[in-house]
Picture 1 (cartoon, rainbow, N blue to C red):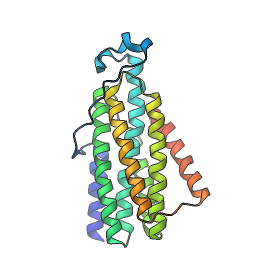
Picture 2: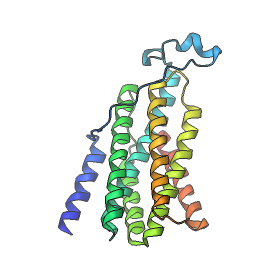
Picture 3: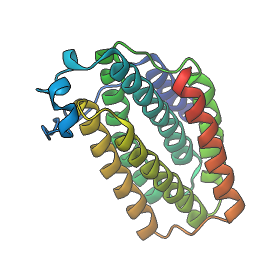
Picture 4: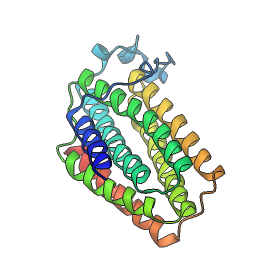
Length: 220
């Protein structure tokens, strides 16, 4: 129990202090031409050529994505601590390593855009840790189902951000694309490992909580 407490405290401090280090390099931007009407304003796709409004929008969206990775850290570490299945614990910790990459990437991008993380990150972390712990103490199929539903919702959320991010912001878009691919793989792995569909009311509650979080984090 003492060892678990140390692991949880260390993860929380690393997550909330912004010192996460990625094991993979920042995803490379894809130099895809923007729509014709935007080409003159975004030629070269460099940060310096983003307008102030575009930088502000990208910063807000990447702050929301950073909050999602803060929550993912809490969810995975809590669920891995609570589960009694060693194999599942290992899978959760492997997925958490990908989420650490995402956390570091979004933090770096926020710095580049001159933006900041959410002021409410400690609250998001605490709430997600509680949810992860409860999922870990449930049946294995329900716990895996929780991972599947969480990752599916995140994937949909990232799709929406790809629609909203400025066409010229290829650095942010590359990060979001890679995150989306990783989340889809986590959901598939969890489902293939035996994850069951969650009850409808629980899925709706998760979606409602996500809406509150994303709308608040967009500004705070």
